[in-house]
Length: 435
Image 1 (cartoon, helix red, strand yellow):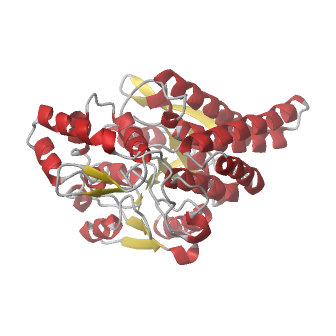
Image 2 (cartoon, rainbow, N blue to C red; image 1 turned 90 degrees about the horizontal axis):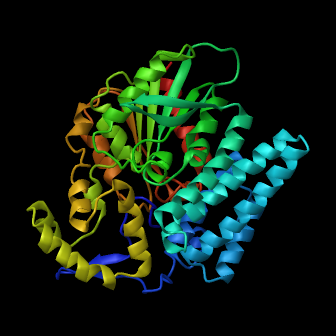
Image 3 (cartoon, helix red, strand yellow; image 1 turned 90 degrees about the vertical axis):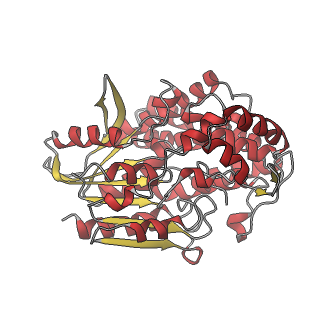
């Protein structure tokens, strides 16, 4: 299963400087093996994305019947990313209508649930915007804003606090999820996103579990993420400690946060970002790298000759070779590549790949001093077995390695079908090390 934010999938690297497509040019490649979970839709990208929708049902961020009805509509229309985007756009709009009607009659509980589900449904057309007629920057911004308005409508009804965290001369937008009960200093977990998930995803993959267990949680959007990218055009940066340190500063000044019990979970690409940050920000009480990622560049299977040109600084030659390669790639591979590199904000292929070289934490992980859990997922085609290597490079005394497996339904990058199991493992460990 190809993960949303890392892999240039479906491609075999030949000896010549070409990427030889493993699928067909119209994105109708066969879905990967994996039983029912691997054969929902004909496009592996669309198939994979729907698993996150189904998984979110465990926290009320989707309804199984609603989601499968949209999947049926996408299947009938060919199962492509564009068909999937359209089916979930229609579903999101319809469920928003349920929320609007409930709000007008004063039923805040139904409104909250409907808005939460609708927000999750609209993450799919946002994810696949580049495969639809909503591909322009303005169009993507509009889809993001539609989705985020729904998340905001749900989050405020949960009582979550919208926050602005000082960041240079600007701010990072976020949400503070306060644990129920008397207001007092509590353990707090920072939920650090990756490349392309949204606030509503962080709610299901961490936020809801945190407050259930008496933790506060902070969901935020950093450079290259959410509003920072779609509305402000601020790209990713490799020195992620410049993002996390202001967050820790801000949290330590809150009267409802225990400054000595702040943990962080880096999800997906966030596993690499947080590894870099934790190597320099020493005030964290615990770190989870989910999954462990050593080097983003190595997740992009370019021919060795092309990587050599990039490393040697031969811009024109590298761009010329890519100009020959790109048109020969399957449409699905083009989409995956375009989506992955977009929030890095680089003008050409050469610049994009040079930027990737800065996201290497092989040496950084040795400098982490906080207790650290590193995860890995069976059948993860995005980063493969890098989690084990990250774990072995750690020098911190208190560390743990966890592999999620197909036997427990938690396979594939980031465990799209098993947020509850994933959260159980992580918060059980956090409860042990952050007392």
